[in-house]
Image (cartoon, rainbow, N blue to C red; front, side, top):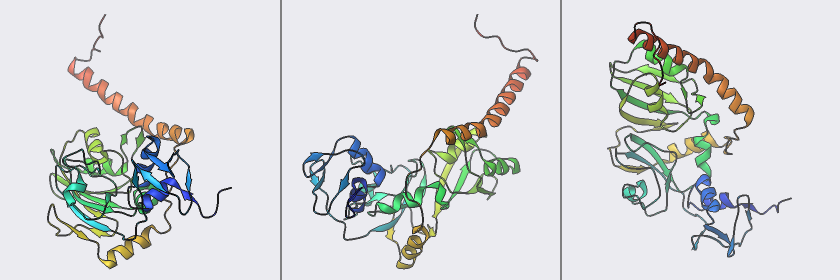
Amino acid sequence: MHHPDSVRLNKAISDSGYCSRREADTLIEKGRVTINGEKTGLGDRVMPGDEVRVDGKLITKNDTEVFIMLNKPVGITCTTDTRFDDNVVDFVNHPERIFPVGRLDKPSEGLLLLTNVGDIVNRILRAGNAHEKEYIVKVDRHVTDEFVKRMGSGIPILDTVTKRCKVERVSRFEFRIILVQGLNRQIRRMCEYLGYEVVALQRIRIMNLVLGDLPVGEWRDLTPAELKTLKEAVKDSDGQPKVFTKEDRKKAEEKVKPEIKRREERRLKREQKSTGGRRRRGPN
């Protein structure tokens, strides 16, 4: 039974604005966090008055909430690691310690939310919470009706099938896509699966936050109305990390199998066509 006044160590660190809970877990695993001078482990709890330090630096209570919107340029990396010259924290140069909510690939641009309130990060990012993120994407080939249909129906990547999403053509080479999940390089991987290459990718909305005419490379504080709507939208969200069980993995694999089979059949047809109907032999 935990003491009613105690909180999990990762939550205490994220509530201070030092980093997100996920990043706090990484710091704890690496042995960089202490409580009252003692090394800590995942799951440890903190009592009021306990002294928490990361790399010897005292973690203090966060009294000032910061929520800003950045129009991230291409070439900036969404990391708080200042060893990277192109890290987003140095680029913004905010007086408070802030960190990005989610990521935008280095070659991508657009809306990025940064904050010092760690507790809100998982509530926004978890796909199960169905919080929308909207993008405009330019590709190297004509956007066809078939492409729009396939993208919206789910694409097998990273040992799973992407959730159904909203996709519409904007022009011959551009489309709009609205996601409720954020797999690694998701849009680029989805396009690659269908034989397309992303030329440019811009995020224009996160939930109720719209990029609008904010210039590239500039940032601004959220308005009181934006912040109120954002907090209302996530107040009942489950911010706990999703546990991916063996049953979940089995279901994901079953979803992927039909697509893998169809992809293999298409590959064999192409191979037979290029060899006049004869199967290529492997090395003897």
